Amino acid sequence: MRTWSVIGLLATLAVGCGSSNNPSDGGSTGGSGGRGGAGGAAAGTGGAAAGTSGGGSTGTAGTSGGGSTGSGGAAAGTSGGGSTGTAGSTGTAGSGGATGAACGGIAGVQCSALDWCDFPGDTCGAGDIQGQCRARDASGYDCTAVVCGCDGKSYSSACSAHQSGTDTISTKSCIAGNGGAGAACGVDGDCMTGFKCCSTGGAVGSPIACRQVAAGSQCPALP
Image 1 (cartoon, rainbow, N blue to C red):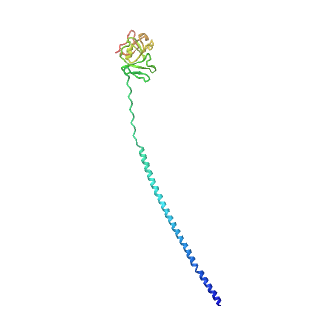
Image 2 (image 1 turned 90 degrees about the horizontal axis):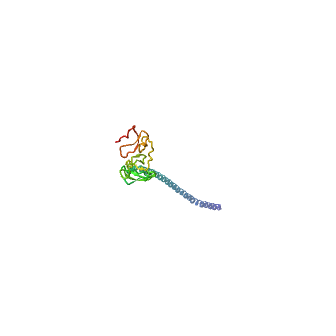
Image 3 (image 1 turned 45 degrees about the vertical axis):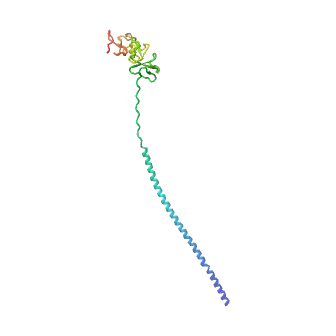
């Protein structure tokens, strides 16, 4: 009987020793649960950062739009300026050559109203040959024989031709003969019947030409 009492006491002590270890294990598990709370705080911080990023992006876009429009308007205004230039004036034409100056040539230079252009030989300035301006009232020319001028008309003399402002040739090629009204002539015989060789004007430098006159009449007097 006493033996079974000892065995029961030892069993009771063994059960007591095993129960004293269980509280220590329960405290350790509770500590692990506390670390889970720290993870929740980290997630909250991440949300705050995302909110800050969205606000910054909106402000930048507004500044860019306003600056670009202002610069474009200023450039367009500058382009419209500038006044119209003034046209140049027209040059003055050259005057006629004086006595002794060159005349004719490729430029066709004319002498003054007081001179005539004396070309070499019977050229009359053909082939752009140059001549020399001479005074119309100069002496030293034959003033008695009929001549042909470079203008294709006949004159009572070289002096008369020069007075009209034209040079003369050495032949009478301008007189064809049997001429009608206005044809060059030297004598009445150079005109057809009923015409006479008359002066065409009262001035000294007027050419002579065939003119119709009444039978037995003379060339009319001219003023």
